[in-house]
Image 1 (cartoon, rainbow, N blue to C red):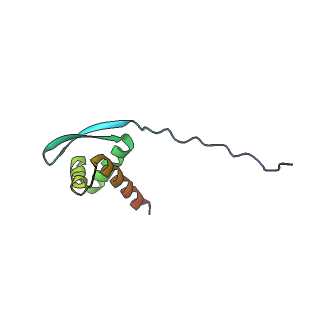
Image 2: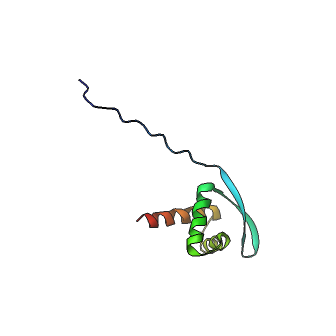
Image 3: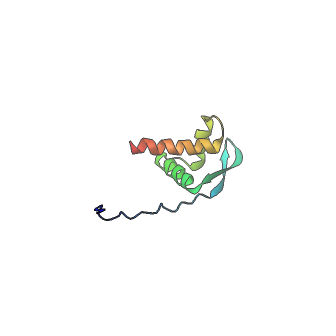
Length: 87
């Protein structure tokens, strides 16, 4: 009497690389290291390529307009770019 039909199969979430990866960059002539997840590095590299910039140049641009932590600013920048392209 349940009559509910077939039970949908659950699709497991994708496996994500959430490990932090450190990269050394030069901003305004100063070397620093930035820690981000691989997915964010991938998005930032793609954005830099679309803009015809090096990754260091993109990071320097973001650094110039940020408030607070650089790693957080990079994550938010990548997220906002993805949101804008999804519209």
